[in-house]
Amino acid sequence: MASPEGTIETTESSDQAFPAADVDKELNPSRNKDFEVDPVSSQMVTSLEIKEQAEAAKKQKEPEKKDRLQTLKSAIIVSGIIVAVAGAVFAITKKLKEK
Image (tube, rainbow, N blue to C red; front, side, top):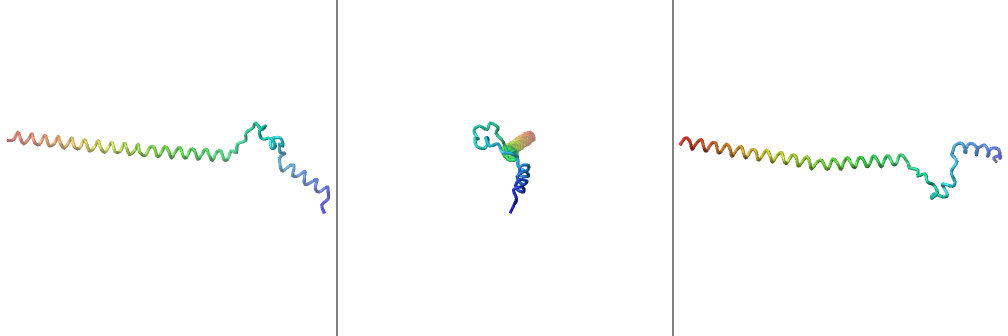
């Protein structure tokens, strides 16, 4: 059997291990004006939001890059057609002058 003195020593050591609870806050949460936030979970949520924003920005830039590339391709094709037409006009005028 345990002696009452042994029990007292155990309670004293457990008092030092655990902080005292605020009974008023625990029993009446509406009176507790200090909102406590878990820093680890809030950091996780923040990092997830940052990742999602980065992915959304990346997805938004992809169509812009495709649009730029498409515009460049169109410009090259149009300028190639213009050069071909100009070359044909010079060739035709040269042949007409020779006759």
